[in-house]
Amino acid sequence: MALYGLPILYALLVWWLSTGVVLYLNRLPRRTYRWSLLGASVLLVFALSELLGHSQSSEVRNAYLAFTYAVLIWGWLEMSYFMGLITGPHKHPCPVGSSNWQRFVLAVQVSLYHELVVVALAGLIVWLAWGQPNQVGTWTFLVLWWMRWSAKLNLFFGVPNLNEDWLPEHLRLLVSFIKKKPINLLFPLSVTVATVVVALLMERALSPGVSTFTAVSLTLIATLLALGILEHWFLVLPLPDSALWKWALRPDDSEPGEALDDEDEGGDSGEQMTAEPDPAKETSQVARSGVARSPT
Figure 1 (cartoon, rainbow, N blue to C red):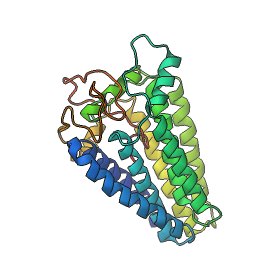
Figure 2: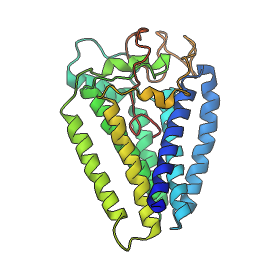
Figure 3: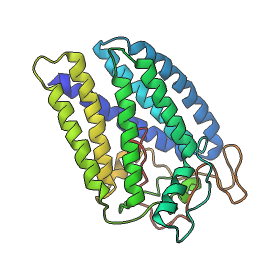
Figure 4: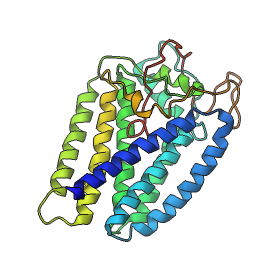
């Protein structure tokens, strides 16, 4: 049982801790962002260099390390987006009365540069691990990317839990691109396809004769994907998921008018896109973009 229990617990711990750290840093005053991003950038370079070395080995410990490095790389992407370092050419709320197509085009433009960086990093990771026996880092990154886009599309088409209160003050404008609905047609398809993939991964991991490295690798990736599915359910079910990261959800200390580098006259910073926050929603949840919310 330890063969499968250990990677499940490890993936859970990495998911919970990395999500909490990013949430905590995002809600610090914006004057701290440059230091957070500097530290994250050092970790990014370290993780990429280490991923190259550990991809060449199929020892069990290297499966855990490759998984961890991929999550660290994803954490840098999440921080660079939510701290306004890399966003997109459109920095204004969605105009009232926009059609769904206009809203989609503008939403893409809001994070276009960031999406291009995600594609570039994905290509770099695939290239670094190409032909190597350890592909855990590659598949971890791709699962995070898949779950992020699935969550973003579900938010676009409409879910009941917009989770805007987890966003830093300067990013509450994002809500203007999101619909609030009980559910959308994409949601059941999203969770069904992902659940089938989890089942297939675990069926392979539990197959007789499978190597320890393969069993651990597939269990790590399947657990991460299962957590992404859980975060999708957080978007539609009335679950108090904020309790999982209560330690990270300190009051938002963002300082109005202060930006990472420059800021528009109207107060837009980086990736801002929507209306005034509702102070009454003290317990509502936050929009996810990673596995679905996190680095993960």
